[in-house]
Image (cartoon, rainbow, N blue to C red):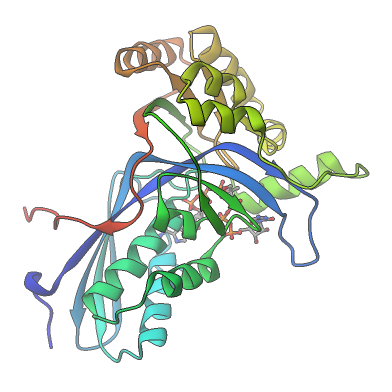
Amino acid sequence: MSGDRTDSVSVRAPAKINLDLSVGALGDDGFHPVSTVYHAVSVFDDVTVTPTGGGLELEVTGEHTDGVPLTPDNLVLRAAQLVARRGGVQAGARILLHKGIPVAAGMAGGSADAAAALVACDAAWRTGLDRAELLELAAQLGADVAFALVGGTAIGAGRGEQITPALARGQYHWVLALSEDGLSTPAVYAEFDRLTAGRALAEPRVGDEVMQALRSGDCVALGKALRNDLQPAAFSLRPDLSDLLEVGLEYGALGGVVSGSGPTLAFLVRDHEHALDLSVALTASGACEVVKRAHGPVHGARVGDLPRLT
Ligand SMILES: C[C@@](CO)(OP(=O)(O)O)[C@H](O)COP(=O)(O)OP(=O)(O)OC[C@H]1O[C@@H](n2ccc(N)nc2=O)[C@H](O)[C@@H]1O
Ligand SMILES: Nc1ncnc2c1ncn2[C@@H]1O[C@H](COP(=O)(O)OP(=O)(O)O)[C@@H](O)[C@H]1O
C-alpha cells in the first residue's frame, strides 16, 4: 500500500512553559523528582503521518530544524515504533514534522513531537490505543511527553510525567525571549547538582502562591509567583540570561522566568497590546534577538487540519 493524502493524519502539539518548577535531589535512577506547573502555549509543531507498506521515513521542515536529529533517536520515530509495537502493526509510515517550536529551548519541542506522533500514528494505523496506553508510552519517551498529550495547565509530579489538571482560570499573554543557542537539559540538571551539592534539598512542592493566582485568574499575582529552581543553574551556564530577565522586568513585564532548563525566558504581560510593547522594547534594547508572542493555556496534542499543499 502506498499512502496518499486521504490516509494522512495531521496532529498539532503545543510547546510548554513551567510556571513553577520545584526540583528535589538527584535520585538513584539518574532523575530528579520534580513538582511543576506546566502551561501549554500557542507555539506548535505539526506531525503528519501517511501510512505506507513498510519502514519509517521522516522529513523535517519549518522555522526550527537545526539540531533536530534525523536518526532513529528522533522522538517522532521512537514514538512511531512504540505505537507499532503496542498495536501489532506491520505497516510503515511517511512522517512529516513541521517545527514551529524552537529546539533545546526549554519548551519541550521534542516532547510535543513525540506526543503528536503517538496520536497521529495511532489514528493513521487505526491501532485504537486508549488514553491510558498513550500516557504510558509517553512516559517511556520523556518526562514532558505526557503533558504534551494533555495540554492546558497541569501539575506534573514524579519525573514530571504524572499529570493532574490544575484548577486554572483565564488566558495569559506571554512574550518569549529566545536564544540562538540551546541549553542541554542534562547539563542544566548537572549544574543544579553542582550548585546544590552538600545541601539537604526539600521534597519538591509547587508553591501555594502560583496555585492561588491561577485559581483566581490573577495575572499580576501570577507574575509575582513565577518560580524555577533550575533558574540559577541556567544563569550560571548563561550569565547573559540574568541580564535579559532584568531588562524585561524593567520594561514592565508582570514577571519573568526561565522556562524549564532554558534558555528561553517567559515574560508574563497583561494583554496583547502589552505583549507588543514589550516585544518591541526587548528587541530595540539589543538584549534579545528573537521574541515570540504566545498565549496559554492551549489544548494538548490533537488531530487537526492537514497542512495545505503548496
Ligand atoms: C527541565 C524540564 C522541565 O519541564 O523540561 P525541559 O527544559 O527539558 O523542556 C524537564 O524536567 C525535562 O524533561 P525532558 O526534557 O522530557 O527530560 P528527559 O528527556 O526525560 O530526560 C533528559 C535528562 O534530563 C535529566 N532529568 C530529566 C527529568 C528529570 N525530572 N530529572 C532529570 O534529571 C536526566 O539527566 C535525563 O537523562
Ligand atoms: N523531534 C525532535 N525535535 C527536537 N529535538 C529532538 C527531537 N527528537 C530528539 N530531539 C533531541 O532533544 C533535544 C532537546 O530538544 P527539545 O525537546 O527541543 O528541548 P528541551 O528539552 O530544552 O525542551 C534536542 O537537542 C535533540 O537532540
